[in-house]
Length: 299
Image: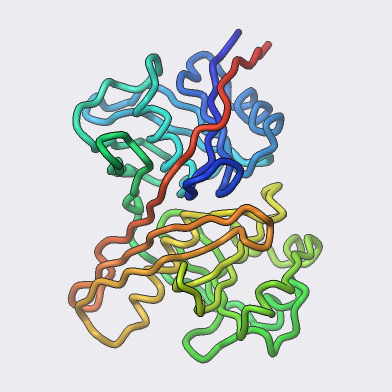
């Protein structure tokens, strides 16, 4: 079986920046095991497989795989897949008109709004498929050990490290400085010992004209030592930051940079809306750049 694929760099405006993604626009005929094998072959943080929607009201069913496991939801795969489908001449998706797509995923329905520059599609913005949840706290010493940091490097003034999710759970923890963020290195044995959700998302308020927040995400148990841009983690982060604000009603917008320490700088626009003390929506978006197209033979 021969299947077309495309790769794109997501959350960037230039090639070889951002987070690379492989997309198979028509994955009909592949088994789950074959999808996992293809994702391992690409060895990118995620690969997506597009199938016809189960409900004709939606655009497509999209399955997302890391090199080791399937994910219920992820940010940059949705942004990149929408970008690819917007320009695809053939795919398993339903034809769409306008700038809105809806993907069926294991975490639920994901709404995507295409972004345009001079009428050309330049990227996309997604709405998280699930409401925000903040789960149990994780001891700062465990987070520090998992990231090769000292416990004093974990900043607990605004919140304790905790599991936060808008569809995929992450341990979210603030660090005390940009130097601490740069020094972080994942220790896979600590991740395995404690089962630290999908991964650990570290962040620090940025002093930068480019971004308001700088972040890094480690998920070694999923075959992702470090991710250049993690939409699902950053949409949970923006929702968490909005939830922590005292005002019962607000819209919080932040520019989040990630991947700088990997040499793949990424930039995401994140927003969360709170009404009557509850997060009612969270979004993440950015630009995409095409890189490669080709054919992969399976079986």
